[in-house]
Amino acid sequence: MYTVEDMLRIEDRGLQSLLVEIDIPTLATALVGTTADLQAKVRRNMSSRAQATLSEEIGLQGNVSSTKITDARKIIVTAMRKLE
Image 1: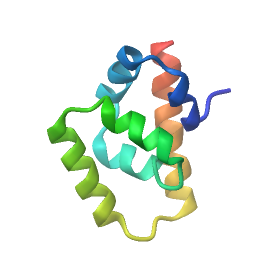
Image 2: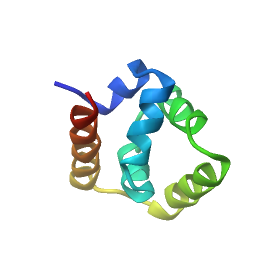
Image 3: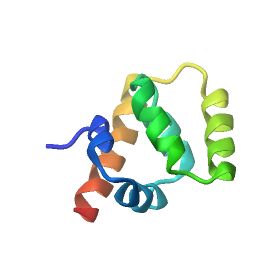
Image 4: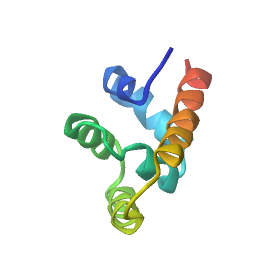
């Protein structure tokens, strides 16, 4: 079973393909509470414009419920399974 933290093990090209499948608001929500390493890897594999949008989205979120975070992470895990 995959978790969001498994994105750390994905090669850069694979991660880039995964990120194309996920909208920025969902990604921002899913990254809440993740490690700095994971967040840095995700940002490294995004265009500068997408990085700016992600930063803006994270800044707008405020307090996010655990249910919303879990739902966003499920979307990412589903996308990971599809790309496998």
